[in-house]
Length: 242
Image (cartoon, rainbow, N blue to C red):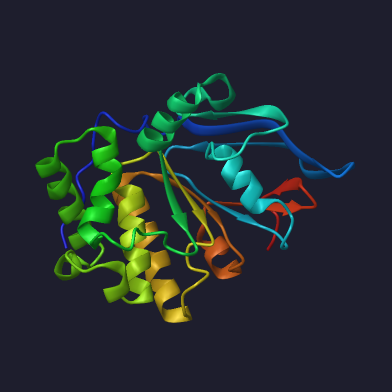
């Protein structure tokens, strides 16, 4: 398979931070009860770096991922993506940052069932305003790269679990984002398919230079990342043994 060509106008140069969280805190007030989910979380991620976030269920991993992805609000602190502080942006501006600078992969692929694999991968480009023909060309090339060239016109229901997740990876990467956020991206796959999807993400990380932050329970995957962050009761410990 051919390598994917870099887009020179997209992510920042190597060595620069593509994402920075500073003193992030998140609390919920429900029925008079105050629950602290995250407490004074700070870290940065460089261009092309891979990071795992691990921790027990309820430790705040997914909440942190949603906050740094602009999908949830924080109680204190700030998150900067590609040089832009999310809390200082309007909803529309945050949406543009997510479309241009971030990609998302979920445990359950979240592909649109009524659209084909090609149409699903095209979607982020079309939202950006890319011409249909160009979007299809870029999406087709990426589907071929992830081994789905012959499945491009199949709908999600016609794909296997591993194929659906590889399609989700292609959709996350088609805009050449600065960073991809993955929430248990292989948690719904058997061991063999999980290993294939993991290997694919790491290959694309090296080829495209996109950074990855992956929330995972899989310690084997975490061990393959450049860094590991461990969340325990909302408190962050960096580079701990997992």
